[in-house]
Length: 369
Image (cartoon, rainbow, N blue to C red; front, side, top):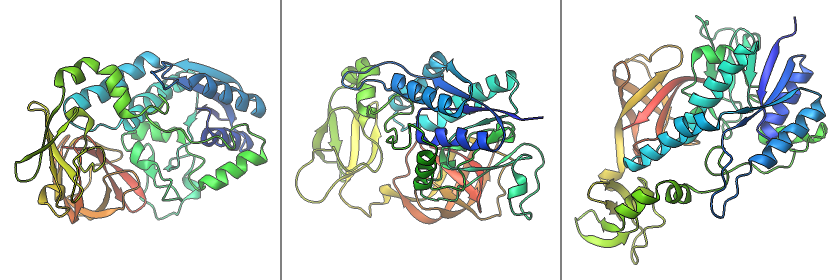
């Protein structure tokens, strides 16, 4: 019997080629546009209507059914509110990771399963090892207990497992990532060959689903009262000297260099901030110990298949596209962990995620505290 796949069609080239490849592989494909955001912000119109129309045109070109699923209310509650509360607390959250956890691989996945799907698929650059895909992988990989395993994409520069580490083993068992062995230029070439309207469409930037609006403009819009009440405050250097004034501690993140407006001499880097005092702390010493660390603590840990082992060497990525660094776990509890890094890393940022790998397998990760 033909297996049924619901593909998240975003209106971009990656998801378009994903759908095309699955159709050609013989799956019964339905395209779904997830309407997660439709609000315009001052100077930043939301591109959802254009994206929806492009997704629909791709579905027509491929001859597949097409549906719109409205998750806007849930997206605001689960992703936007999470992001806003994080910034108010002085951390730097990652909305893309939360969107994957709560929307694409939870709401979308669950509704697709309810509608009789065997699998969901997205245009992420990553690989998944499950009962459907395992024949294409090297046989000496760890055997599956149940569910699926998340693995790095062939193109390390495009690999998106960093954003997918909070996806569940259950969802991965019913997920397909057809682009895992492809590069971006190859994907565009495949789109051109098939006459897909999205072949030359630029990649979306900014906040997940919201559009090109920057974080600062978004916060000014949705936390206007908080920003106004917080107001300007002191920029304090490593010697405790006030060297300037910031326009809101909420806008600054650890390691930031630009936008400090502190003139003269060496560049300054943000080392920390105090939301209650409304102070931003900086240093012009790139070797300042407050900028570097070889240990980190994590909260809200999520392990895809099983927790890591304390005596084993793993690799960790603390930002998307950051180099992998060897590490070992010092402590692992139900939802927390402490990690020793093989080398000191600069600007470990509270609220961002550390994602761990055992070779090519993404084992999960947690939020830096």
